[in-house]
Amino acid sequence: MSRLYEKNRDLSRPIERLELTVQAEEEGRFDQFLAARLQWRSRTGARKLIEQGLATIGGEQRKPSSKVREGDVVIILVERQDEGPEPEPPPIEVLFEDEHMMALNKASGTVVHPVGVHQRGTLLQELHRRFEGKPLPKLAHRLDQYTSGVLLIAKSDAVRTAFSDMLEVGKVGKVYEALVMGRIEWDEKDVRAPIGAAGDSRILMNVGAESGKEAHSRFSVLARSPFATHVQVEIFTGRTHQIRVHAAHLGHPLLGDHLYGDGIPVGRFERFALHARRTRFPHPITHDSMEVTAPLPPDFVDALDLLHLATDG
Image (cartoon, rainbow, N blue to C red; front, side):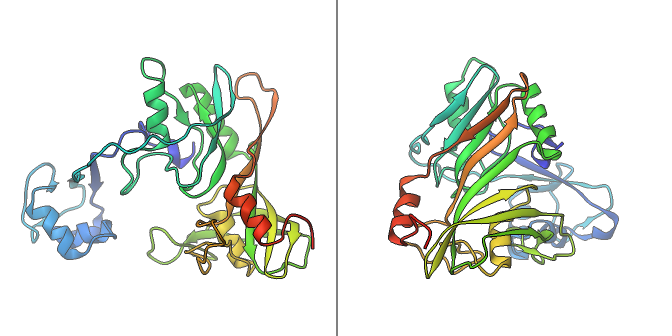
């Protein structure tokens, strides 16, 4: 099973608590353990959680200097800020639907499920609202907040499991379109370069990391200009930020990519230029061959025109 389903939880519901089990090599001060595990918090921030009773050892409040031992379970209650007015529901555009599954055209900027600071107004929460009183739909996979295009949704656990299994063995074909920096002179290139976390970062990925996992992408040129290239990218693995990392590895990062490129927007295109264009897969129940295509969004089309990439140059 993929990492998405390891805990089999309802991803539409924000996480309310975390439970961390202390390993032998992590024994020591409570605040040091917490700061090491919660890398986005400083030691002062970790101490504050302990003093407020939001982080406990087995449910018992302790001092920051208390010792944690192997096997201790540290429980962290997730703070909720003043939520303010209810956000606008995200758009739901259906490309295909039957009794077993849906394929949606996800808009750029839409968060798929609650994560980090984005705890309300997500696509999955809106789907659950619409399906209230019926079996709730589940994600078959995920897209980053600013990636647009085809997103597959399962209407039952059986269909979700089938999609997860197909993804693991490469039976779901994913084709993206992207705009990258610079003029690419070659027509097609396979990239087989492992991807893993960059150092201790929880966000940034890179090629050749010690923890890197096999990653395979195929880039094909669709159109060229002196300053940018419109490419099609087929991926055969599903690593975090795979296309963005491989594009940067080739020396042609995605336009607008603030992590792996210069982040400079192109006209009204104020995001990284990546669209999940087409997905092919055997239907998880009928086993019919399926292909779902999402049209390019208006901002992507505008960027193509602005960069004179409508035809090969």
